[in-house]
Length: 271
Image (cartoon, rainbow, N blue to C red; front, side):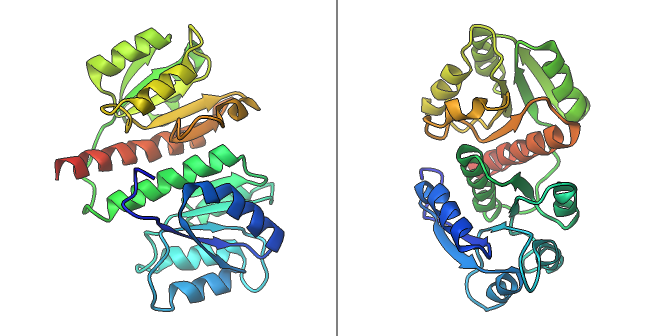
């Protein structure tokens, strides 16, 4: 909880009581305030009630009265609520991700959600929310991105997916080289592949998290299917995670999210 002056409020929009209890259990360790709406219509009523707005919504899409897509569109079309981040969490397959983003959602996770992935995504969106409330509009920025991977393909993909002209890129194939790059160049974002020479990805993440000077360096973890579970015992080791093989839209979205976090941290730190 060191990132937050006080607990933030998450509105869970889910009609299934069992799913709500599971979600509460996954989010409880974050120590935020959880409130519930049974469908999109109820969520909109809560937002328009005149009380304090939640800091984030986690929304299912298959619900009675008003589905999550329509609710998301309504929330994002209202200037009073448009800046509240919405994470869509659904078992719906096919085009659910594209429809969610088209409706204005800020993030998407398919059910059943990996607990670590859900927690780090929620924490990152809430950190951005807390920082954004302290700043005005963001000035343009070109982030410095360190890609630490033993794979030449991953190094190339991250640059091509996010855009070669959108960032200044640094590369490292080993833990020792990544440490040297971080100390010498102070990147804004670390894209950390579990495929790292010397096998030190976890050690590097933990070392950075324990460093008073470097612990706020946003880390995007690139992992193979099933590999994320081995990171679950670590406390807040990364800020986001992305499963390989990489797809351009998700790589771009994930790097952009952490670049925004880094930018806001700098602005607030300079204030």
